[in-house]
Amino acid sequence: MRTVRISGRVDLHVHSRVSDGTGSPADLVREAHAAGLAMFALTDHDTTAGWAEARREAERTGLGLIPGIELSTRLGWRSVHVLGYLVDPLDPGLVAETERIRAARRSRARRIVDRIGEDYPLSWDDVLAQTTAGSTVGRPHIADALVALGLEADRSAAFAGILHPRTGYVEPHYAPTPVDGVRLIVGAGGVPVVAHPGAAGRDRVLPEPVVAELVDAGLFGFELHHRENTPDGARRVAELIERFGLEATGSSDYHGTGKPNRLGEHVTDPAVIERLLARGTGTTPVLPRAAAS
Ligand code: AMP
Ligand code: ZN
Ligand code: FE
Ligand code: FE
Image (cartoon, rainbow, N blue to C red):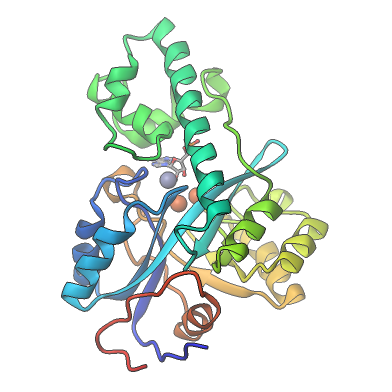
């Protein structure tokens, strides 16, 4: 088992333009230095394609990096994001499932764009122009296309406007259940944490029997400190953490200029990071240059 001592600030949830952030993986390493972080986790939606670039830049500059992923899962109508740290990026089960999710996201985005295109001058090419090759396509890229066309002021306005579910243009995409997501991550040697679990308020935090199932499947923790958790949602999450003996993490969910979240606005206790690093076996982290093994 790997034992390391971590000191300094660690942000466990960061997106690059390999999914729907706006910076490159190497940009994020530089921004993390500037923000005074010791380490961060790169957690793009349903892809590990940004890892190699982030790893090179982290090793070159002495910043710590935890390779991760934010897996899209769904429980009925409810979207549940599961962060997976230190997964094996070549694990066949994880590779097959993330390819399936990314393909479903793409065809879903095309259908959304077709519907919007009936009412606004938006084409699929406009959306593709906002993505990088092979990236995980989502509503943020459609938002960027709407902004480029002058139809919305910025991403947040697009999410509150044309891309809001109430307008009828959007639809969900295929995703595995949360318990299958946790099993996939654990099967790939990774460490699963439910992202922003209190974002929809106390009444929509995962029901206790579901949490029990996730814990049985190897859940490590809940992202307790996240700007989208509501105060009563976070209180409920804290109760579940206590009841099931789970870990509490904190992170920014930074998306570059695409969202107001600032890098390092929430961080995770170094002792939790040490236990997370001890648990993950699918890939190796880059330790901050100051940390001793
Ligand atoms: P999708 O997964 O395609 O339904 O899109 C939802 C994703 O958009 C979430 O993962 C959010 O993190 C992301 N997102 C990026 N920017 C924004 C924003 N300004 N407002 C809301 N969601 C955003
Ligand atoms: Zn996102
Ligand atoms: Fe998320
Ligand atoms: Fe995220």
